[in-house]
Length: 137
Length: 137
DNA sequence: CCGAATCCAGCCGGATACTG
DNA sequence: CAGTATCCGGCTGGATTCGG
Image (cartoon, rainbow over all chains, first blue to last red; front, side):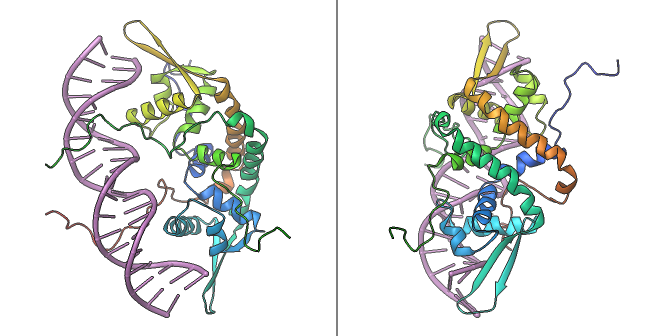
């Protein structure tokens, strides 16, 4: 009766599940959380960096800043020389460990089936047109 | 003995769990899978589009193409007019439904706690320098 | 209704150099 | 060691237009 004939919007931008899927889609975030957890909930910048091959220093710093702003991690600077900085999971960050580790375990369990997933550049890499370069001759 | 003193790389680029986290980090992919599942495993482009507010047509098409290439979905074109195209989950795609729905449910269950996650632009939006624009006046 | 092609501003993200 | 600042090529992705 009151149901409109059109399809309902099932992934409203504000709903919690969608925000989760979006958080998971922020590059490096889940991996940082996983790595932090793996190291006991706290670890230094360098260790974090070394555990994330493929993530540049710049990317790592940016990600860490964002995560700090979002309340997922804490940053503690020790006034020593050479400098030492430790990142640790906040309670909110810890909350995410469960689903992340679940996903992680699921990945291990299904490693075989997942080999079929071939290339995975980063995202969309399909709009290379046939032209190459001619913009400003 | 053979263990090196340095920290091990725990998220090697080739390991299955990492590839999963990366797949989840590809914008729209999990949402498309979820939406497809929600609609019974198959649905038309338009319905898909309407269920993903915030996703432009172009993005949707690109994502669908990538997913098709990766074997996550199938695309079927009906030679009718007006055109009708249906996308459906492949067995590989179906495999992902379980963890995605788990995550989805987890999000609903923890909706309260997740409200703390404030802004979530898209990813990194922190490198705005102080300068603004002067390149080519 | 579904999608391809084109245009193009704006950001992404690596490399590098520099501070403390 | 940790982080910032700057340069800058190239991809991202929205808007629009055309086609069946």
